[in-house]
Length: 390
Ligand code: SF4
Image (tube, rainbow, N blue to C red; front, side, top):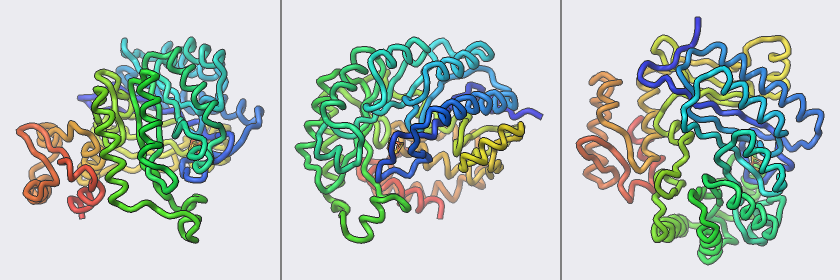
């Protein structure tokens, strides 16, 4: 039997996970392996297409809304392979007329020519992981390029694409507000329509986490984190950027459609090692995850077996929790009408009581139609969700 996407939302987003990077950044806990072997690239490119074809065959979908090449560093993929994947989707499935096709790129991994070919292959949105334009901060973050290369890459992207994003990391000891200001000013000067600013986190198992444990690096104070966050918001506001998600800012109509799909809890298919999906089957929503072990993922594909390591039905309560985890990240918040149409009062009642309490504490805002974080609540999103669901 086929997996069926939900009745009210049959548009699907597709995420393709490219699992390799040139080298591993010390803060990164994404599923990515440092590798530059062209044979391995060829093999994984071949298998990604195979995984995509098999995964799509299990689905009944009306159309494809967005496609996102993420990773890892998908700008290391061959243009031939990006083309094959896009051709397969567009030839076999109906795609929205304004389909968004994004690709994440690392500044040290593409030439002007390659970027031109990526665009010709159909990619219409580029997400450039700059992290900083300043040498001292790039060194601290263990990035594989310098300021000059970052600027050159940014210039190439800005000239070639109208829809693109620059990603930055902020909130570490060696970075000052002035540094951050310089990075954001550069992005604005390039005319960049979308900026992501992620706060540095110390994830278990990363070299940075280790350094934090043995005192080689220190986390910045909470008050300083707040100062950075507010500075970003206030600065970008002056240039008409709207913070539409906790870490994401866009000019009007330049929000990432693909990522909005995650935050609005729409269905998506993830393909490639470790990729997650949220799909519905006979009106039952499932969380699915592909094998994280790249060798296992490969061997299952060679044997024509399903590459899902996990396929768990989500209870109503789990779905409600996910809706809050994702939806409260958005400035628009969560639609009350959608909650009421989707869940029974039995499930919603205990949550309403807690929402009223958070509202009285000025941590949430509630209108006739939406529930969203207040300004103070924005900085406490994790604890708010924990309070609601524990
Ligand atoms: S380039 Fe990106 S995905 Fe690769 S190791 Fe660095 S942060 Fe992680």
